[in-house]
Image (cartoon, rainbow, N blue to C red; front, side, top):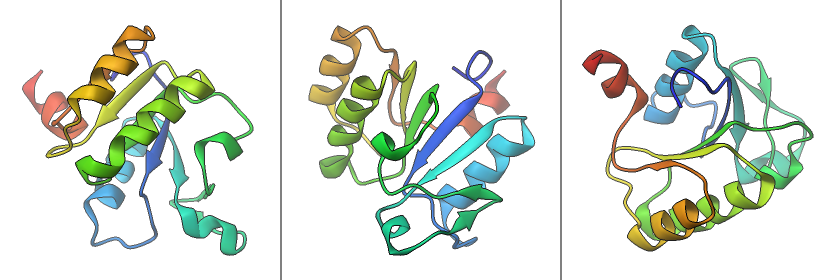
Length: 127
């Protein structure tokens, strides 16, 4: 996913630069990836984060998403894996500390690769 996927929807990304999602989204951009912020407050009106339009849901994004990167607690993350499969994403990434084995089973059974409980920054450093 790190090498072959260019467009990353980041679920939970807000404009707060003190949040981990913001730092990782900025890192993704620095690595040449397009970041698509997904945050429910996008329905409150047009807004941007890191120069990209924020969408309220994955289904609202009008172009293909390669990876859905989830910054939500484990108990809420599985629905985004399901949505990723529904929109035809090529991969799902659950961030450090986010684990949902049932979502992993559903997602991989649908033929969509999934990573759990790690971070792109960690994986890039490990190379």
